[in-house]
Length: 169
Image (cartoon, rainbow, N blue to C red; front, side):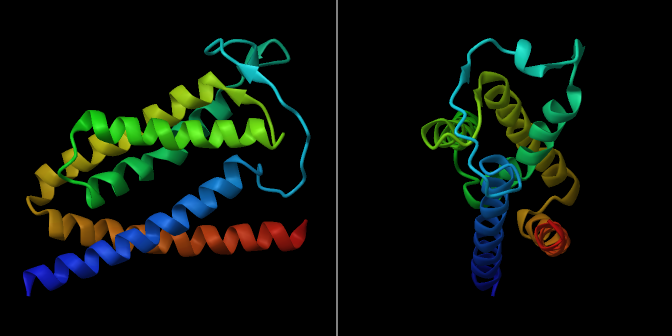
């Protein structure tokens, strides 16, 4: 019975991860729209001019990038619990790098080292949150069930919100 529950949890988590990555791709690569800007630029100076708007530090995008990648850290822990911390971080970094390279290649926006850093930081926070929660729940099966329920509800809400935004624009 325990193996069956783990398999079901793994399947649900995998489906939620795919939906999450689809939404994340839409949000990051296409900036919530389908217009191609044709902009191709690379910023290799962390926290430089790309985060300054009207002479002030624009923290909103920095925080949004961190928050957006927290679920990825949790999902990786749920699906690849046997991976080392470094392997998990490198996977998050790789996903973020893929987004930045895709933006550059297709002229969908600027590629920015700051985004890479903040996205990876968000994933690391997700890993940390998962490890803290596993200490509280004392069972990965229970924790994964709770996360899957919360993630399912959040995914439904986010999908509805995105649908409304797309229809209204």
